[in-house]
Image (cartoon, rainbow, N blue to C red):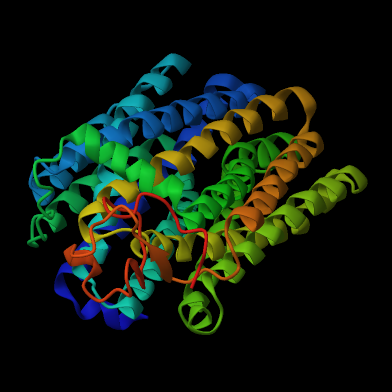
Amino acid sequence: MFTVLANRTYRHLFTAQVIALFGTGLMTVALALLAYDLAGSEAGAVLGTALAIKMIVYVTLSPLAAGFASRFPRRALLVSLDLVRAGTAIALPFVDAVWQIYVLIAVLQSASAAFTPAFQATIPDILKDERDYTNALSLSRMAYDLENLLSPAVAAVLIGLVGYHWLFSGTVAGFLISAALILTVTLPSLTATGGTSPWQRISQGMRIYLQTPRLQGLLALNLTVAAAGAIVIVNSVVIVKGLLGGSDADLALVMAAFGGGSMVAAIALPRLLLRVSDRRVMLSGAFVLTCALLAFAAVSMRLQTQDLWPFLFGTWFIMGVASSAIMVPSGRLLRNSAHTEDRPMVFAAQFALSHGCWLITYPLAGWLGTSAGLPATMIAHAVLASFGVLVALKLWPSTDSTILMHEHPELPADHPHLRDASGKRHAHTFVIDSLHANWPTERG
């Protein structure tokens, strides 16, 4: 897996990602504790609202940002957005009212909404080989897991030494170091789009995504991941500190259990995906997530409070494994479903639509958890997760071939695209584009 780091450009980008996410992980723990200080038992609702704002920004701004991104050099764009994020994070330790959390989260995540899809779409342009890209996806998943594993562990130590407010300084440093590392490499330019307007590019990315069956299935599985992930992110602080009477350090360790499970899966997946299809791995992970939510809901209704600790750690670890099983292969689906010039917009569509799922589950986890209690909240999220599994099974065909037989009745017989066709019928690697507006009903 780690051989891909021999590529200098990718190595620097991966290091930038690790450091920025490490800082973001510190912010996640600090933000939960800040919300608890300001709102007490209502912290879940505050976090749910703050994260809903984050999702609204992601859903609305990421496609727009990607549509206009081609007008700017990639490196300059990524560095500028890192600096905006660092500047915003500086203000977080000085928050003394809930509304200030909401404003700063909106500004910081606006920059992230532009940064993340642009960063993700750059990687397949650097790593052309399928196996290298798969390894990079696993490494990227591991980088995200640092937000849930190493960051909380370091946070647990720092909280005891200097208090949680100082964790935000780690966030600022992470963004600044990320910007410095990106400045050290030359990034490939975006492929020319032939004068296509930003609005046409936005529409094209969404159309490719929503017309491709495997990506329709991915969208459904995004809902499953969001249903489980919202429980972890929003309700962990309420479960640990409110229900179980744990400490700040206990919260960090519980979050680390989720990250640890995800990292274990990320390490194992490159070899597994050589033998097992993306579809089977991802659907299996989604099924496990649903079962884990239902199991913990049942256990929480039967056991005494203090007896929940081992089940909490175990369930969070299992959900980390299952979430990674869905998220690691998703980049392969996106890469194989669009031409190079369309990939930035398809990645932006995934970013926006997947976070639209989180926009549903974040506030539901916070508000329902406050009003109806933990078991009811987990059951509700299990229902959402199972819905995602069933929809993915229906929309994503089990025979998901990349080379499809199809016809072009609209093209003249001498059209260059039909050079090797039998009449107007031929087969090739199929993606939605200007010549292929709809997915063929017959698969070959």
